[in-house]
Figure 1 (cartoon, rainbow, N blue to C red):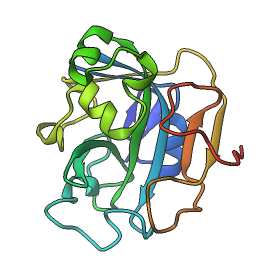
Figure 2: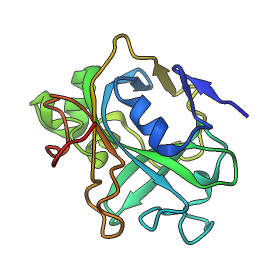
Figure 3: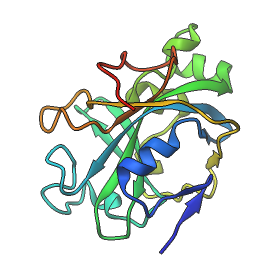
Length: 192
């Protein structure tokens, strides 16, 4: 069953959705910007929260597609994921970084930094800048407070190893907007 949003079928594989999300604009209550870095996760992937099956913590990642899965990383930072694949599968895309474009004053106040490159250059920073918390878990991405807008132009996307994980680190499911200064970390050995 297709779930099209911003020109992307969220019922597709997580790696396909993660690549297609680069260049898409995400807004939460009207604050946000262009997605410049993502990572894909799937239930067959040992690095995924869904690898060991459904739990109360990861239930949202089992669907339906085009919904938010929000979890706390290391008990400190909220992380925003977009659920994909069919309901029950257990796949999603971590939003690692965005280029801030709308509501910069709000983001600066929430983050306590001025430099636009530091506002959303990491998954915890994205959530803090956009005001995303566990209250957003399971919410549909095609309804308020979320807005997703299709790419306005073609983009060059590089793929490489994911970061910040301890299993399946070399799986090339990290996707970045080529040349973006807003990434969480530079890309190692990019491949197209």
